[in-house]
Length: 99
Image 1: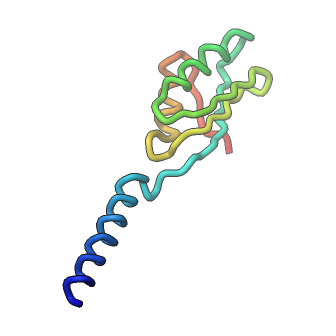
Image 2: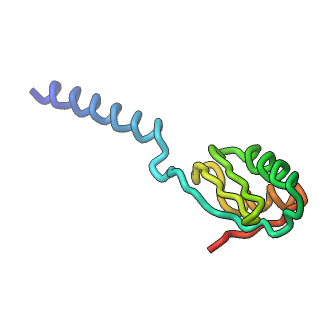
Image 3: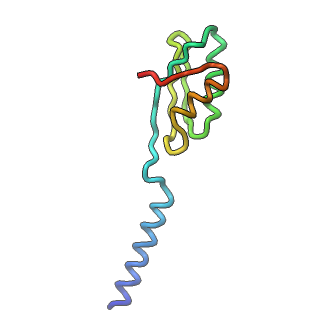
């Protein structure tokens, strides 16, 4: 009886370990809006969108020229607001988190 319980416990432990390793426990999709005041022409959003899309973890980017903002959806286990604002700054368009 002791051997059977021990074998079942090992299987359960193995299954739980696999689940814990397969999916990050704290990963979540997050959407933020960045203010990008330096967009001064209709072509600027193309550059901003390209820069944000290249950031690892970004799944969706919508850049709005008229509002001078970018709405970005990303995996917060792979990236964060600092990397997003750095990407736009490196492309020549400094941005900040819009509250």
